[in-house]
Structures are given as C-alpha cells and as structure tokens.
Amino acid sequence: MRYWLMKSEPSEVSVDDLAASPKKTAAWFGVRNYQARNYMRDGMEIGDGVLFYHSSCPEPGIAGLAQVASHAYPDATQFDKKGKYFDVAATAENPRWMNVDVQLVKKIRLVSLAELREHKALEGMILLKRGNRLSITPVTPAEWKYITGKLIGKE
Image (cartoon, rainbow, N blue to C red; front, side, top):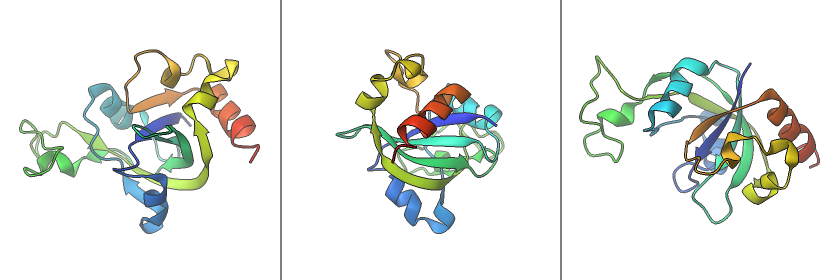
C-alpha cells in the first residue's frame, strides 16, 4: 500500500462535494502535470491511502481521508473542446492525461498547512518543501502514520 496527498481547490471539488457524491466517489480530473499524471498512472493502486488537501483557498490543509478507488483511466476532460482542461494533442487512441477515482473515507477537522509545518516529524514532507507545486505527491508511511495517528487521531 502507498500513500498520497492529493490537492483540490474547494471551488472545484471540496471534501463536502466528495461526501455528497454517489458512493462518496469522484474522478480526480484535470491534472495537467506529467509527474502527477505518472503518479496516478504508474504508482497508484486501488486501496492506497489519500490525504485530501484543500489548496488555493483562504486556509489550505488536509480536509479528509480518502482512498484510491480505481485504476488510472483516460481523463475525459482532455477531449472536451469547450472545457478548460481541453488538450488539442490528446486523442482517444493516445490520451495524454489520466485520472483515478477517489473515495472519501472520512471528513476530518482541517489540519492546516501552518499546523503541518509545526511538526519536526513532517519536515521532509514533499508538500512542505519550498517551491513544491505538484497537485499529487507521495506520502511516506511514517508521515501517514504521524498525520493519521497524532494529528487526526486527536479528534
């Protein structure tokens, strides 16, 4: 099992939107970074743990626990000529962009970016490194255990 932090802008898809979705599951669409795409395509497996992170909002942070609910498959938004995620170079025969389905396990109190930065045990976390802009990053088993046990577990 692997662990991931997946960022979503709450104005696009929030943890509440995911909770209201059928089976609390939604496609993680719109990723347009090759490294993040490769994580979904090559690294994710059904059942992997996900820290659902709200980004580009007044208080960014981890808002829920989720799991990967599907293998990677072509992101349909790349083919929508009127959509903001359209990619002229993508074809059905050779899609460029992938997504996975993510299923909410539990909505949690917001564990803010500022709170994450306070913990020495998390100082190596990719999210906290200067210049990191990836929407999907791996989380180590030790980071997962610390966050889910010490930070979320104190709810």
